[in-house]
Each structure stands twice: as structure tokens, then as C-alpha cells.
Length: 361
Image (cartoon, rainbow, N blue to C red):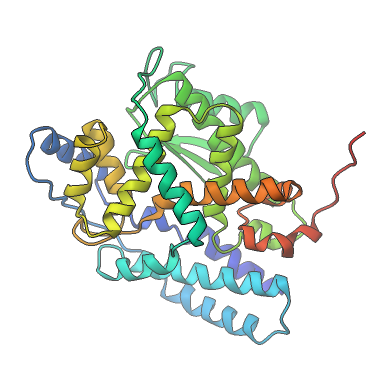
């Protein structure tokens, strides 16, 4: 890869922050208001506003990169780089469209239907997991950002320190998920009541599933490991859930949470509004008002609650079933997936670049 193209794609990967641009401003206070409305049985009309990110100059540079890559002799690595440039341009366009009707159209390009078999299996898993009986959490729930050494914030900081990872663990007031990992940071939502099992699972998910692949990518032999591939973050989420399953941490409450996310997006794409999705999650599936509002907000990111938003939440189950099936058939591919934000369809291009693993004795 030409150094100029590498620098531009690396810059774009750092600066195109899709979820940040499509998260409503003052999200925390609006969640509290909507949860109160849901609790009172009143209609839910979100008052979301956004701060769209302008990427005009960056998108012009990405267009030049796309042209340069498209005219090069075709190679698997060149095709992967071109796909990543196009994906970054699409995400930059989505950042600029925050709060407009364009999000609906662009989101369906960014998160298209997966292969039919994976879509059916993910939908069936969601239905089965939502039908499972509710299980009460055991132990004491501790605020996510508490100074208590058992809190999520404290445990993440301890694990980052133990592994000497180049990450800061900080509280982020508007964060919709419980935690999220980015370039050199792990964010934690404040004030969430978290049980010990969920703390342990979240630490595994963020450290093993997201932070360590970023660390490995930094010393990988090709820049695409550091830049990531198109849909690489989606399949990394699937592997992170698979790690939870392997560790025995994909319990009934977590399964229900993932299933509810998937169901929220299915309902949204079927024409339901934010209010209808949140109400159904609470009334039909037993979620608490705050959880129902947060999950519905995550489905409708970037929109106004009446038309479909980003719909990213479906990638968790869809990528989980795809990554699990792939690694069951080709377990030797896991080191590639564990070395950055790498999609399944980029494995064959990148696998020859990694040093062979030592033979087992």
C-alpha cells in the first residue's frame, strides 16, 4: 500500500466516528424523560437533536484514494483496501446526515441484509432467547462508575493496568451501551446498576474482544490490520460475543439483552416507531423502562424515532452466528480475526501476512 494511501485511510479510520455523530445530544436527560413517559403510559416522542460531523475535505481525499486503488492491477489486498475506503466514505456520509431522512437510506447500505441463512438463524435465536424465562441476577448491583473496586470502571482500569494496555478508561455521560472501546480509550456509561456477572462479561468483551485486537493490530505486518477492513468492526462484535459464550458468560440475562436488541431493529425495519418499539420491549418482553428506552434509542440512532435509524444492533447476533460457524469450520482463521477489525471475507487476503503459529507439541 502506498504510504500516502495508508496515511489517509488511517486518518479516516480515526476521525470518522459513526456512533458518536449519530448519538443524540443530551442523550442522558432525554433517556430519563422518555423512561418516565413510558412508566406513566404516555406516548413516546423523542426530542433528539444531533451535531452532524462535516467531512467534506476528507471525503474528497477518500474519493481520490478510491480512484487510485480502482485503477491498480487487481489483488486481494488491493480489493480489501478499496472496500475499506468505500466503507469509510459511506460512514463519513452517514455522519454528515445525522438527524435527516438520508440516514434511513444510507444505513441500509452500511448494514445490509446478511446471508439468508445467517439472517434466519439470528432471528430464530432472538425469538428463542426472548421466550426464555426471566432469571433474576444474583448478588449486589454496583454503580458502573463507582469507586468501589468491584465496579465496572474499576475492574476495567485494573485489567488495563494489569495487561499494560495503552488505553484510558473514562466515563462518558451520553454513552448508550454500558461500555465501548475506541482508539486508545474505553468508555463507561455512568450510573448504571451492574451485577458482578455482567461486570466480568463486559470486561472480557471490551478487553479480549476489542482492546487486545487493537493492540495486536498496531504491530501487525500490514497497515490493513491497523486500518481495519470493511465490516471488520461488525464481525469483531460477533467474535466478542463468541468469546462470552466460550467463557460461560453468555447467560440468560445477556441472551435476553442481545435478543431484545435484534428484535428492536427487526421491528423498526418492519415500520414500527421508536415509541412502539420501546413500549413493546417493556410490555411484551419484560424489559425495565430505562432498558427499553436505551435499546430502542440504539436501534433508531441518527433518526427522529418515526423512520428507521442506523440499525447497527442487529450485527451482534448476525455476526455471532456467522463467526461461530466460520471458526467451527476453519479454526485456524481465528488469529487473523484476533489481530484487528477484520471481516470474514478479508481473512484469505490477510492470513498469509501473519507469521505461522508454533506447532503444538
